[in-house]
Image (cartoon, rainbow, N blue to C red; front, top):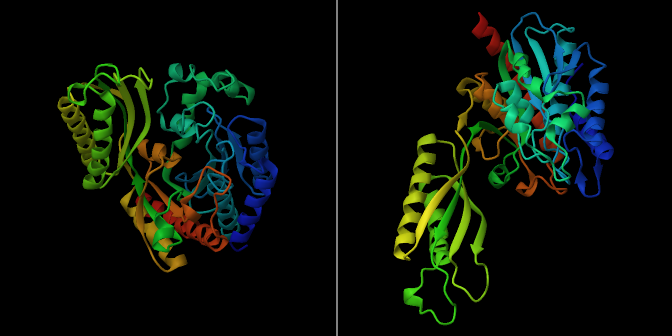
Length: 414
């Protein structure tokens, strides 16, 4: 049986009809709609000679036993954000399903290495605010005590939501055993950004996921009457923050990274008072750890400088940090070769968003991703889309990469 990428597109459309509305995809983790998506996948896997099970964290696994105990894992996620896109995550899983069909047919149910397809649970973190839950559990990177505190907007706890689908949160770390024997991990994903479209390219090989520094920066000034206080004696926290906000983008450009000031809160927050306190949130990202650290140091230096110039003080708070996670260089080469074969050109790019692949790579499993172009660079909304010819090429590229990865695993084992 030959690879049939059009079947993947048809299944993606069928899943959209089953689990979406006019506002977009509604496959939020641990909801009834998410369970419908899981049943959709399981029904199609039932036609293959694979064993299926849900692990201790709620990830769904399908295993095609091979001649070797070494395992090639292909992963993705069926869950979505509310009113999300039809391709985000589900393309990964259903393209992997099609590759599994082709490999099973070619090798009469006994490929050179064991293949596993995984649907990771709650990649998005849309309901409880903790992204990459399932892959983090498998990678050994969750704190059960902290996760017990998580609740959705309706007050439902993560622990209760998991129990409803047959998962005990305390057992989630046992999912680590699922990656035993994993020799490589592959993931296909829509880019969710404008780079490939801007270059006129369908596909790209992903270098890794960028590191992230997230902080609060709070400027402290002095409240004063907005009418009676001369400009030259004001200690205006908002003015210092405003000057800093211009500088931060220059820092990102100079260091080759990106940054975002996502929120700004002022006190006392009334029109008749000079701002006493201004708190902003800063998100900085870079693929290189040293450059990321330099960006954050530059930001602190700039904030201190503008605070001093304005007669203010400044304080810093930590929100979150994750180091850059580079993918495996030989698998990147294999990914680029696969892209060139199906599209005629190759390109390498980092991933700004985090993905399950990052958690797998952190656990020590050689990992790589493929990106396929996103129209208008849009994702996480109902207009998310990719041209069908590009979707076909993405399934073909994942299939070629699978063959290369199986051969690579054989070479490592030999």
